[in-house]
Length: 80
Image (tube, rainbow, N blue to C red; front, side, top):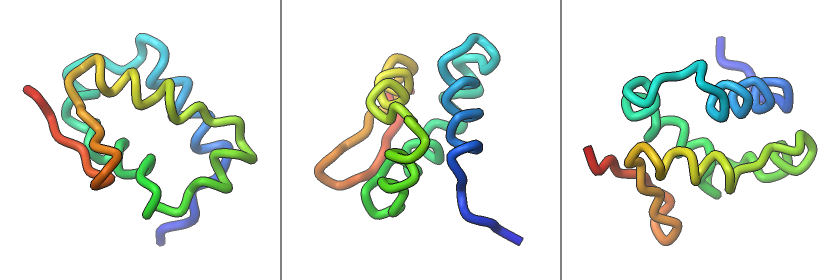
């Protein structure tokens, strides 16, 4: 059963992504799925606001490992 993403989930995700707990290879492998959470169509804007989730910092981390987030189409592509 899928349950809604909560502020706690986002906090854990952000902490993992911004620490050294996830290797760049794993981040590249999962980055497009993570990027899809950041897309406007995901409807998570209110959860981001209530949780203090820093979507811009997470996007920057994804871009460092080659996951390019295209804001105009809300899609992600890997450069690797």
